[in-house]
Length: 236
Ligand code: CTP
Ligand code: MG
Image (tube, rainbow, N blue to C red; front, top):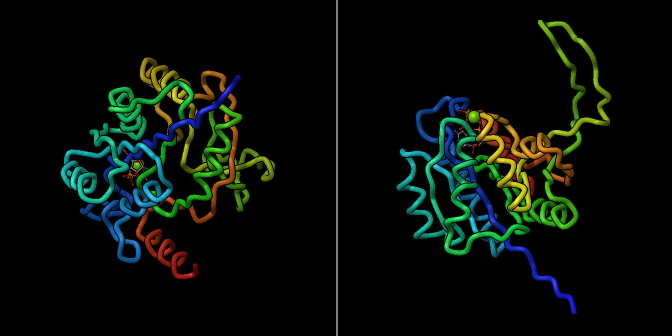
């Protein structure tokens, strides 16, 4: 007799950045989009999705605020940990914290890494990610690029890659736990930094599948992104 059990879903939320491109003194993750702080929108999406074990990676400045959110509103947060100087370091701290959770992941459980700043994520994209992990060790949400991209050196175009092969990747960046651990342990041992987590698995030879993300799944980076996000909410 064989039976399968549903993998558990863990989420690492890097939220330890300084938001320098926002050009404000206050943390961009606490700026409001239509009355709700960016980080709370992100947390609410995972809480409403159900059965997610979240780790929030934050900085000294916001650790108390994050712990308060954990205690008062978002029981899906199982741990709040401090980040590092780079996103890679911050995510690594989250990865290392997984094994010390009260309910730690098994090798084949799912881990989604999702930027705290991508507050327009939908359950639909989370579903695509979890479906993707059924048949792949690693997958990432992405969308075909709408723009033509040029490879440029010293202000001169070197080449024009065929647009139909180009995707913009977003988060969630998704892994089976054992592959995530191997990827980050290798990155740490070799001092590798990457802006996208799945690249750390590529280096080890894993195949990374692209699953359907959403053009609305933007990262709140500069002030106009707050307006874009608000505009999208008004249209729906
Ligand atoms: N992040 C992090 N630790 C860092 C840097 C970034 O956890 N050392 C997080 C951010 O909080 C954000 C996500 O990674 O949720 C994506 O990073 P980005 O949008 O670049 O945010 P910031 O680094 O905060 O912004 P900036 O680059 O403009 O300073
Ligand atoms: Mg940054």
